[in-house]
Image (tube, rainbow, N blue to C red; front, side, top):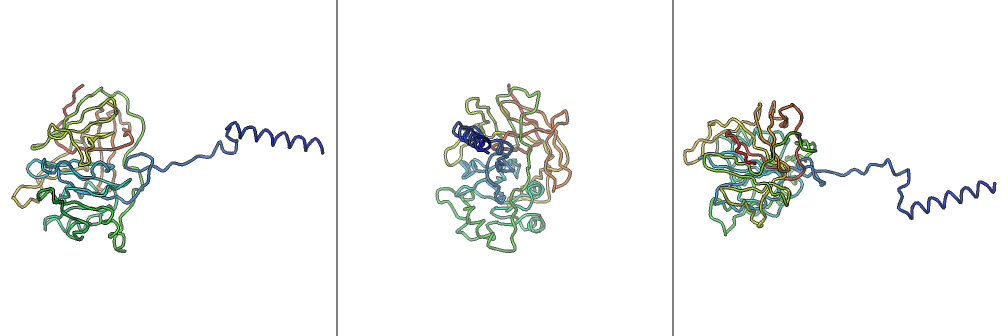
Length: 329
């Protein structure tokens, strides 16, 4: 009996010594501490409701407000060969977003892969409203919300002066039992190590008839700095906008049956089907193929060997264009 008591004291003393020394008890070695990650950017963080905001991208609209908070940014062609942005938010929201502009027909197919999102925009032409009503999204436009949510910035000229308070917008939407905005609930992108056989790249240029973007690799900060029309693309906060992963996605751009009030035809960027793309991450470029069978499917990105191309966790910018990207080593 004394022997067992002595053994018990010895074991207790050993456990105490191990604890003091910082050694993890065996019982805890197999406990996996799960870290929640945002499904859109792959970083540690929460998955809140998905809000997509249409943002003006003309020169007069720069610097844009709240764009540095977006998890994913799409650049798409609109009338006159200009570009407009669809900024996707889930991990965090800024106090203000803008300048908010109108929806385009390309948005409907593009955004369907995200599930039932909240779609924030200034307005849409009458012919497009039935299409928006039938789409798998919640219409949170300025036409349905008061000026206390969609306000005007007195420091900016029209029509690039509409700014959105996203927290108030979602608060009002969530108070309506008929509105159901989904949270990010699955990975839209595969995150992981870079593909093999990348090409060392310092700059990449994407063009449209009346707009151009350039991405420049910053070796010190390890990110792709974004330039718009040869100028640093700055947010209203002063931050130089950047991407951790950028995709130049070649898509078919064709005239649609829609147009703006000036008589310009609205182009349609087709984001279902298959095509070519270039991925930029970690100072390298990679030739990819993309595929998306239906609107409800997410876009699959593959290397030329057929392997899934992994994104670097962080901010993602995707440029939809029908022109080949120009790369420089």
